[in-house]
Structures are given as structure tokens and as C-alpha cells.
Length: 291
Image 1 (cartoon, rainbow, N blue to C red):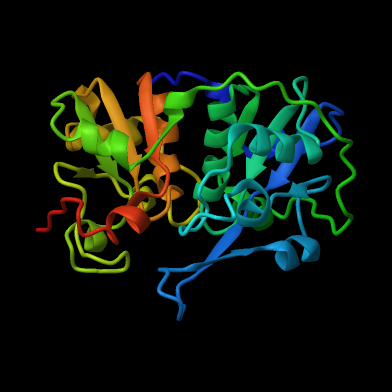
Image 2 (cartoon, helix red, strand yellow):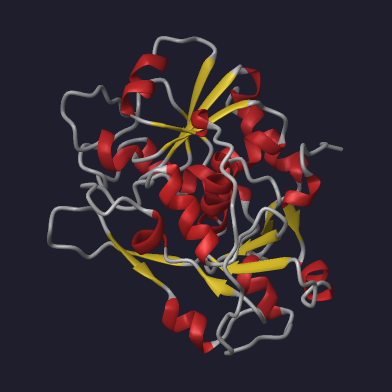
């Protein structure tokens, strides 16, 4: 049996339904969609899911708009993290408070919920959890849904930053020769091996191992695989033996699934490369490998 660092950082649908009336609970739909049909040179456009949310959501839930409220509008890349004070202020506006318990869920992929979990972790907030199975599991089990808008009051969020939770290209470059740092690519094998050039130059950051986000999720239930199986996936590529981990993907989203699980499995030095291959793949001065 694999022990988790914070077992309460992952909640199931039955638990959430039983606690919907808890006045200290704050539930948020974190869903986002990437539109890969672009004509502006970017690998994708970032779209919110407000129409879906308005059509039906977990009762009481608010919605986060990752690109509009939590990301740097001046970045050439999508979903680049804003400074901590701006991110904290956005969470507080939605009702996140030092005394609240936050439940995060998303549609189609848990990565949007884990991205917000990792951002709260970065800010030093440790009272957040991801809903295992997300909206799909909730809906499949015919649990209650609502179209009523969220009414959470403004909160106050104290920032106790963990600056190492996110890194940029310079930190990744500096880590390449470090034998005890493991670079973990959370994208699919086709992108990892260079068969798909979605992010500019095909390939991966040199020395990386591949633990695709999709391989950690049950395709039928949308819930995460048992912790033993997730631990085995990291062990299979040798990531369990590293002292430090940097996870990455296309834009720092799928990477948070791997980071979430590495942290829950007991690894202390875990970081997400924020702009990931959107930045690395488009910069010809940075090393890359395929195969």
C-alpha cells in the first residue's frame, strides 16, 4: 500500500455530495479548453468553459477562468503564471479564504484542477483538494447539479510562497547536467519521441523521462489509478530515485498532474516548468532530442 503525503488532497464524489452544505467549503470548476486550430503561430488558443458551467455544475460551485484571471496577459505564451499577489487576489475575489476548504474539479481532464491545486500550493495554501474523477464521474453517478450562479463572499488569502514550485527556462537549463534532477515529460509518447511537432521543433528536453498524464487516469471512470500503480509508473522510468523533479508538458498544465502525484508520493523538491514546450520548442537556441 502506497502512503500519500496528504490523503485529503484528493476527495471522492460521495464525500463531496455529503459535504455540499458545509459553509466553509468552496467548490470551483477549473475547466478550460485548448483550441489547436490557430492561425497566429501559437500552438493553441485558451478558452474558458463558462457556457458548459452555466448549463450545469456542482451545486454552489464557482468557475475559474485560467487565462483571463490567473495568467500574464503580456506573455507570448498561453497560461503563463501571473505574479503571486495577482494570483492570490484572483483567488480571494472568488471566495478563497485562509479558513476555507477548497475543492477543485474539471471536465475532460484532471489537469485543469491540478493546475489550480499547484498554484494554491505555490502560494502556500494547503487546504485544497482535487475531486477524483471530476465532472464526468459526478455526472455519471447522477449526483446533483445546478444552474444557480455562485454566491461565495470575497475572501482573504495570506500568501506564504513556495517559490520553487514553478521554474522557468533558465532553471531548467541549469538543471540539465545535474544527475539527481529528473525531468519528467507529461505529454503523450508521440510528442515525447518527436513524432508530433505540435510545439515547434519536435522532441523533448534532453535527458527527460516520459510519464504521460493520460497513463495515470482510468479512461472509463476518469478517476486516477490507484496510488500503487501511479508510483509504479514513475518507478518504471527511474523517477523515484531522483532527489529533485521538474515536470513539464506543452504549457505547464498536464505537468501539474505529474507534479501533484510526485509530491503526494513523498518527493519534496518538485517543480513545474511553467511555459514548458511552448517556450522550449520554439527557441532554436535551446537543446532538444528525439527518438
